[in-house]
Image 1 (cartoon, one colour):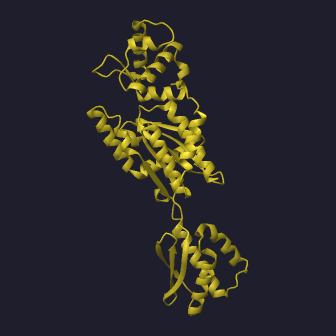
Image 2 (cartoon, one colour; image 1 turned 120 degrees about the vertical axis):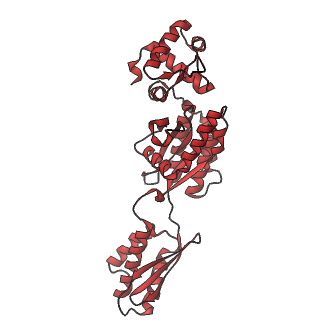
Image 3 (spheres, helix red, strand yellow; image 1 turned 60 degrees about the vertical axis):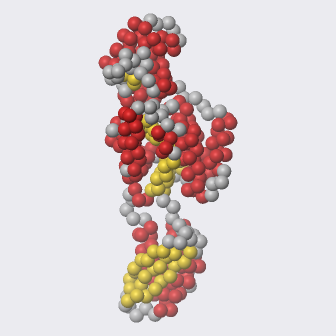
Length: 351
């Protein structure tokens, strides 16, 4: 259903009812609405319209109250067609940018600062999904371990050590392994494999490398093996999920039922691969994406919402998404422009 399919009176009542519910978290009655509506309507007339909206599946009435609350379908219609999204004030924009850039060094720091900032401003959990960063290399060494076998030892700047087994030509002298190690170290040290591999392969293919045929073959074999290890078939392991401020989700807990939903939400957050997949959906297309409740199977029990926006790297390629997660009773009008601006600031910093 689209908002335009409702009459003007029904749209006004639904808009003000959802606004009141998002502010208070309480069922909204006809008397409250009669005081909020810009035009005069009797409580009886309002109740009739509310009954119609309930029949359309946009509202429901908790058995403990005569008031009504929006359903997930009603929230979706409100967000898509009735929500009035304001602009962030210039001071808010400047504060967000200063908060993200202050003390941030490198991509992970920028994203962590942005996530913490969103969490604090929204009083929800901030989250971001980012591509896993490849560490710069400190040392690479080719070591013979058996006839026609060698190990490539890789030491990264952050102290990680990995070994990769490669095939070597029969009768290869030890000096060729030493020469291969020196060649690779001279070009890879302090750089990531991804940034240097294509350049080195082009040099080998163009016979510009001052290496004999056997040594060049070892280097090419080593680079190919490292590339496969660095870029396995794409899955959630290629992504990093950062979550900050989950404790804010407890701030609005007012009843045992709320606590049970928050516990379920914590479990949803723990299912990292599902949450990464959901945020990857936010990377498709431009602008802010909103996932409400059971529209996504991840939140079928906890009744939660995500507001997220994609961000791009220096080449303009969308590489991740950032946003907030919380109960469906979010302050969408404030959070949507906040998330949108934060994603744009992150993109500018990456560029």
